[in-house]
Length: 225
Length: 356
Image (cartoon, rainbow over all chains, first blue to last red; front, side, top):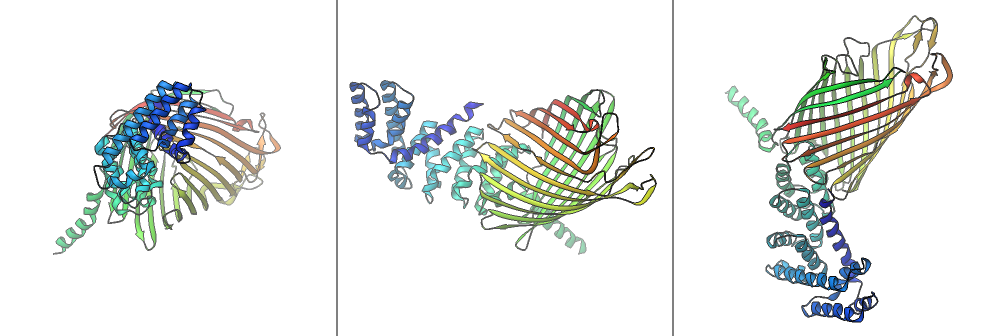
């Protein structure tokens, strides 16, 4: 059962760690690496990886959460370098995907959004899914984080992937505040309690979302309570 | 012409319901389990229960912004492969826009033809009407309601007619947290319960209770998959009921009491295939006048108290939203300064359900 929580926990961790990254400069990260207990040659290899990230156009502070996590878990330098390289690959993928559509340009300029896109790829999102969420969030980029969390939670819960994406898009395009997105999952759980198949209820929510202005209204329309 | 008009009116009424309604849900289930209890200092009794149940639920829109929901069910139990017990229920709810808020209507019926382990045969119609209003973005809401019921037990003298009102205010600063405060008052007319004189004769009139009920409920969402709910409730019952024990013991004011209870609940669905619900309760009851009996059956000088603690657990699993496997259990213990009010119960059951 625990495996169902892991992707969501990981996504939460990655998202919250973005704020830590923001407060660190490239110099202080390299200092952090030097003080992390790795040998000089290992430190040089890690710093080289950070330089590779910078050469690819990414701020090395974006990789700080991984370095901090590695230090806390006393991960070997070789393993850390491998993780950092994979992270850089995902950032490159995210950049490449986001630059395919005009709406993605604004997200590319925002370090947190780019990291979230990379994390979504790491979780297993497909290119079309990422693009669809970005497009739906084009008028509310600040809600991209909550929209991606909603999508991951719906898929993790077992809703069909297509329905999960449609529901996430409908939520992002609605007037519903993003802090209320977890309520959509709650509606599905309650619907299940009333033996309403999740896909049928998801369809009803998608139909109702364009017409509602707040969550109480949605709840009333869907659960009739 | 009139027929055409009637048809059009009928179509206008029924069409929105059909267009916007969810498909009806029909559930059939069978179960088996055990119930064990001990009360009134009697030996432990344990029963083997087999049962079958059927329920129908349907929800649809009424015009543009109204809705109607209907739930009906039947459950039958066979106790120790001998005694049959039945229970039926029907609940119809409707809500329609009314000025700045909504008008909510409710009507239902509970009944048992054979009686249940807790009661003789009964019929229990219920009704209610209320008005609710949302403020701001729906963060604050208020509701006022009138409700009533009638309990008729042909083989017993516990018939009740009840009417009451309640006001509720709730505040939900976010989807993750909501708090609701409600206060209500009601009148119970126990029209078959006669009152006694000091000498044991009939005093005229019948038992009438006034009940004040206050409830504070906190509920919220943990993460994406877990809901919690903690109601705290206070009830004050003022009753004129009294009793007389042969040969000459008059007992005044037998039912006036206060109760304070808390009953936290947690429900979790980490995946669509699993649902877990668990709850606990603690209820503290103090009688305002009635005294406790001792184990010899003699009235003492201390006021009666009855406290109870308990919990329940329910789990279901489904692979395809059609076939469900269910497990549930509940237990409780009542302790009191009157040995005749002390007891415990335990129940566990398992079953399967098919949803159509």
